[in-house]
Image (cartoon, rainbow, N blue to C red; front, side, top):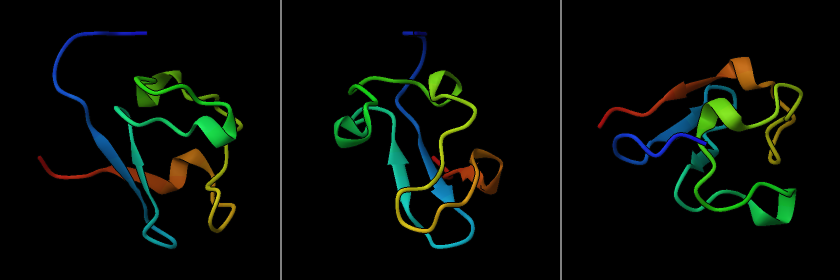
Length: 60
């Protein structure tokens, strides 16, 4: 896990779900503080099932 820089958020381009690195998704097995690059590559959006490739970093 990388500790460099600010926490970022990532938005699903399909449904608008937001993944917040600081909060993680404990109910999905992703601990708070998990950077986007450390989210498993086969993870899918909990709202719509979109792939990780369907997310983009939110503007700062």
